[in-house]
Length: 417
Image 1: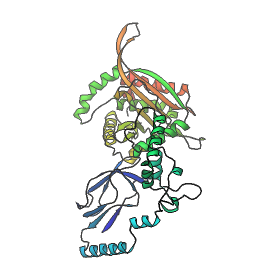
Image 2: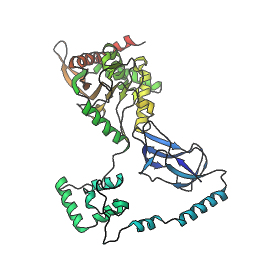
Image 3: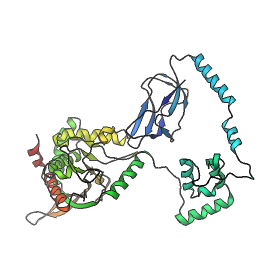
Image 4: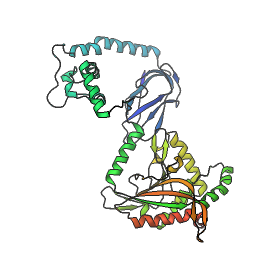
């Protein structure tokens, strides 16, 4: 039998969560057949078999963490001599029978009830999983007698400690004082893309001084243009939303304010300007927040942008965005209005310089140039800029240019190549 090792599935990724096994022990697999789905901190990845055979063992259960370059499952490949496999198994069993079992080893190291193990001076030895369990139950490692080698605290020790009546009452008291009258219904580890989102948002909010700027945009003409173009786009197999207009107008406005498409280097002493506008869009996927970006918006038509927006939205909602689609963004759009929000204060998708949150469109009364009240479609937007090199005047002028294209969408045609 052979072990299938979890391959390197992305730069810097050392572990992932097993989301769903597509096979069970005893199932036959074919070459390139999907075997398991795993969740990294970037996306949902489908792992396929590299050769045909029969699955003999699944090493990692669903919901557990698998390590890169560690065994994921065992299989007997087609053409492998069953006799050799059996001999190998018999040899393994004989070898294991000559060695003390895990239970026997634990019994050897298990201290007697009258002489509990004491940890060596300094940090109490325990695995990360045990430490997490201790934190979840608001315990102290130093209060738990470790039964492992050198006083190592095992999971069984924590559970045994919780079974003590006095500790249960003490823990209940601590939980009541820390959480009031509420009870935790369940504890869910923060993994995958949600964990990465938490890390990136903390880094962005704590290292980038955010400057926010709000504006109202009259999109009455834009809505009318979209209604006229929508049937034409549908005839070509594309769904035309407002996002392609937002993106195209943004790329045109960046041509007049290139600093909005720049990024500060890590040392904070250089500005890197990008000629290509790779505009990201925040997608609320089932796996967490993803921001894939449309590459080179400045050279694409509205129809081409619509095609990319559709492709990326579908992929993001399924959690299957390619790594290339998540990299290289230069500015981002968060369309919170699609869910009904009016205002938001977005956090910059570092290392980008700016992000805009688009609120919902409302039909509101507005005065025209002649002082007459008209019914207009008003959309609110809120910008966040990196205040280390973008000031209020810069983002206001940029927003005014972008607003001009959206309020008079016919003017976009003058700039199409």
